[in-house]
Image (cartoon, rainbow, N blue to C red; front, side, top):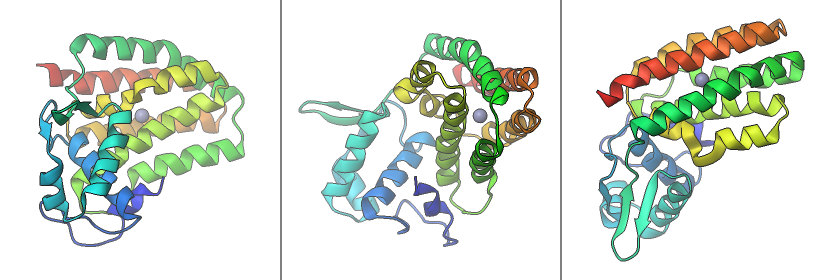
Length: 233
Ligand SMILES: [Zn+2]
C-alpha cells in the first residue's frame, strides 16, 4: 500500500480537496475520498454525487467511479440502483459491542500465540508498521487520520497472521471492521493514545512473552472501546 506517500510528500496542505499527486491518479483519488469518509467530512448516510467530486478534485468521472466502487467493496459506500451512491451509515451501538466482544475473545489469544513464535523478521515488520503510524509529517490531518486507521488495520492483521490461524484472521478482517470503528469519531485522541498501547504490545513481542502480549493487547482493545464509546452519546 503506497498510499501513505500522499500525506508525506511535504507539500502545503490542500484546500477543499484538490488532489496531491503522489501515486497514480486512481490511487490518489481513492485515498482522498477515503480520508473524507474516515474523517466524517462526508457524513455517514449522506449522498455522494459523482459530479460534485469531479468538480472538487478536478478529475474525470473514471477515477471517481473506480474509487467509489472500491469503497463499496470495503463497506464504506453503498450504491443503490438508479439512486446512486451514499456513505454507509455508522455502525450501531449493538454492532459496536459485538465487534469489541469478538476482538477481546480473539486478539489477546492471537497476540499470545504470535509472541510464542516471534522472531527478528516478524518483530521488524511489526515495528515498521507501528513506526508508520507514529509519523507526524504530512500536514493534511484528514489524510493522517485515515492513514492511521489503515495502518492500524495492517498492524493488527499482521499479528493475527503470526498467530497462524487463518480462519480467525479472516473473521477479524471481515467487513473491514477497523474502518468502521475509526469512522465513529474523528479525533486525535483516538490515534495518540493508541500509539502508547502499541508500544506495550511491541515490548511484549520483543521479549517473546505470551502472557504480557495477551495482557497488552487486551488493555489496548479495552481502551480503544472506551475511547470510542462517547460517539454513541
Ligand atoms: Zn491498534
